[in-house]
Image 1 (cartoon, rainbow, N blue to C red):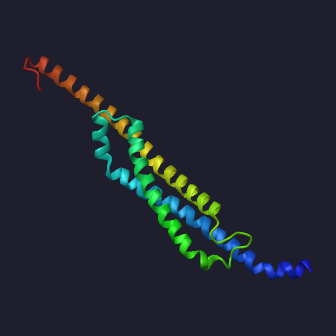
Image 2 (image 1 turned 90 degrees about the vertical axis):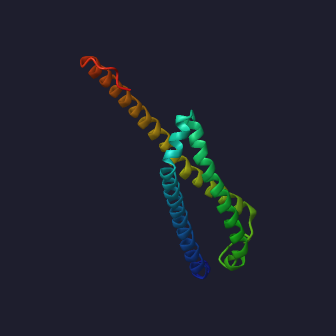
Image 3 (image 1 turned 180 degrees about the vertical axis):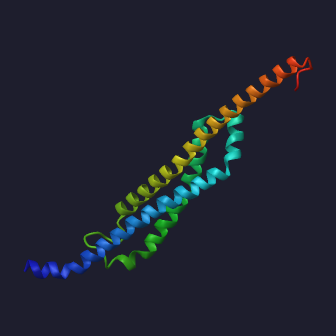
Length: 164
C-alpha cells in the first residue's frame, strides 16, 4: 500500500522539488542582479557621493542614501511581486499540498526574504563606495599638500614669489 501511495505522489514530489530548485535559482539571480544594478548605480553616482562627502557627509549618511534608494526599489518590487502572486495563485494551486494558494504567512515570509536580500545587495556597494571615496580623497589631499610644499621649496630656492 505504501508503494502505491509513494508512486502516486512521486510526480507531485518531483514537480515540487523542481519548482523549489527554480525558485532558489530565481532568488539567487535576483540577488546578483540587484547587486549588479546597485553597484553600477553607485559607480555612476561617484561624483555626487564625492561632492556630498566634500560638503561634510559622513560614511553612514552616504550608506543610508544608497541603501534607501535600494529599499525603495525593493518595496516596489515586493508590491508588484505580491500582486502577481495573488493573480497567479489559481495556476499554482494544483501543485500545492497542505498549503492554501493564498497563504498569508508564505506571502509575508517571501516579502521579508526578498526585502532583506535587496537591502543586503544595496548595502554592500554603498559601503564600499563610501570607503573608497574617503580613501581616495585622503590620498588626493596628501598629494596636494606634497605638491604645495614642493612648489614652496622651489620658489625659495629660486628666490621667486611663492607660486599660488
